[in-house]
Image 1 (cartoon, helix red, strand yellow):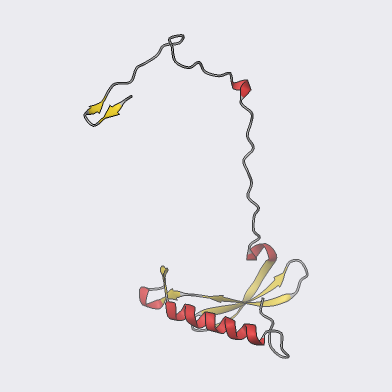
Image 2 (cartoon, rainbow, N blue to C red):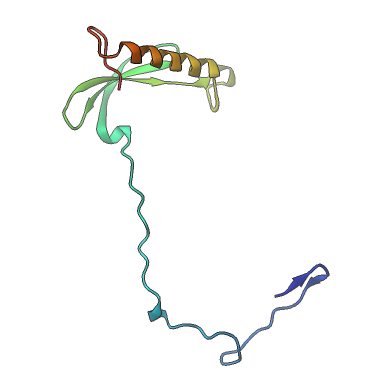
Length: 120
């Protein structure tokens, strides 16, 4: 079907054997295997959450164990949802994000010292 600024012309219908390219036999085409992207392991692939230890203003802490070596760890899950938006997942509270980034920077500075949990 050809189209111009004045409109479109009807398509020409070809019958078998009348001009136009001939279809290729299917044997010529090779089967294509889809490319599998390497899967990045998620938290739940490596840890099993055992229960909630506590919660604060914008985070909860859970007890989990690492599947590979059975080490017990505390996992802090931060909630950035804005309470002014009714806890909507679409609206992140920038103050909460900034406070958590500051906390992470401070933890990095003291991580691994005596009586301080190591941050991963």
